[in-house]
Image 1 (cartoon, one colour):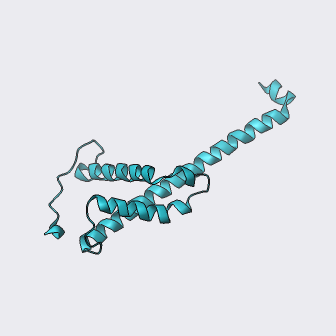
Image 2: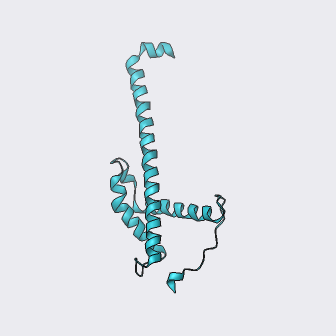
Image 3: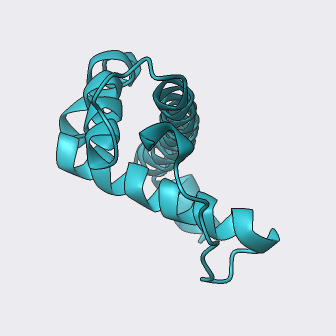
Amino acid sequence: MLDWILANPETAGTIAGAIIAVLLAAVATLRTTGSLRQGLLALMLQADRARRKGLLGPIDGPQVMDLVIQVAMSRLVPRLPALIRPLITAERLRAVAQRLYDLSLDYLDDGVLNGTWPELPPDESAS
């Protein structure tokens, strides 16, 4: 292997450069998805607080998720790197947000991600 690298330094350098570029792209993608996840969670919390205070008016239930997706598409997605933006659609963002919501509910009941769901109290603001 070392003999081949010494005999073909240009090819070996190209291969090493490609590997480094792929690794850097992977790190950037992980950072981006982490910030997207944090942004979605923050938007969901803000929307829930606004709903509980009555600031959203008649918007409730699945409509709140629609509002979160609209805001995320207008505020979070434009901040993503240009190579990733075309991959993020409203449907994919909705799937990620729903998965985060489900995981949050699962974690809230007993502090463990084990597929159990908490009993949610009735919504007092609807009365």
